[in-house]
Each structure stands twice: as C-alpha cells, then as structure tokens.
Amino acid sequence: MTYVTDPIADLLTRIRNAQGARRPGCLVPWSRVKQQVCDLLVREGWLLEAKKEGEGIHQHIVIRFVPQKTLELKRVSKPGRRQYISAADLKPVLQGFGIAVLTTSKGIMTDAEARKQRVGGEILCTIW
Image (cartoon, rainbow, N blue to C red; front, side):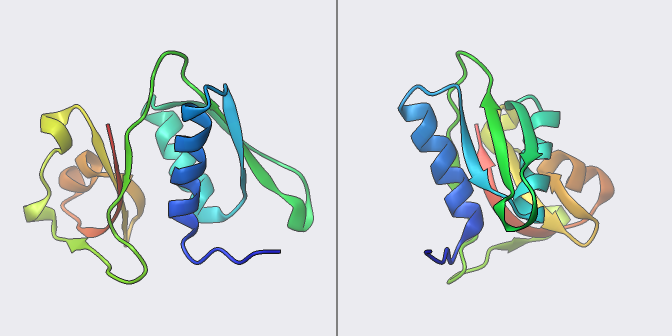
C-alpha cells in the first residue's frame, strides 16, 4: 500500500488521466475533503456525478464526467507551499469562465461564493 502525501493533487491527477484516456469516469479513494470537492464540482456542473461506494477502509468515490467537456485542473496550494488569499484579493478565474476551489473557515466553496460571503482561505485548485 502506498501513502499519498497530497490527496487533492492525487484526485486531480486521476481525473486528468481518466479524461486523457477518454474514459467516462474514474475511481478515487474516499476522504471527506475529496468528497466535498467532488460534490462542489457536481453542483457547479463540471462533473456529472460523484457518489461514495464501499464500506470501511474500502470506500471510494465513483466520478462520472460530463460528456464532451474536458477539464483543465491545476493544483495551486501544495503541501510544501500553501497559498492563502483574502476575500479582497480574490479575482475571477479566466474572467469568470473558470472557478477556484477554496477551503475556508466556512467550508469548501468556490471563489464566487467566498467573495459573496467575504471570506478568504487556502486556494486548493483552479478549474476551467
């Protein structure tokens, strides 16, 4: 069994690799943070479905992609160098065509939601 030092980067890489191989979806080991990020992407329309399956230590997330939509995923904050931003400094990604996923004191949310609630946090990734 291997140990993943950056689970969010692992999630993004699995999605990128599955889309590059033209698969309809992928499997990702389950964690609460990964589930929240996937649920956010489903809510925003970037993913078709993300559901948890399995029991105990054998839980995983089954992700299905939106057909004909290839995601550009970029990890911003890394374990070696965290990237934090205040609500005043949050700018739209690609002039509003993309989103940034932030983890804040009020939970995981998009950059638009963080601007609306006037809360900053750690930028996990950008998606366009």
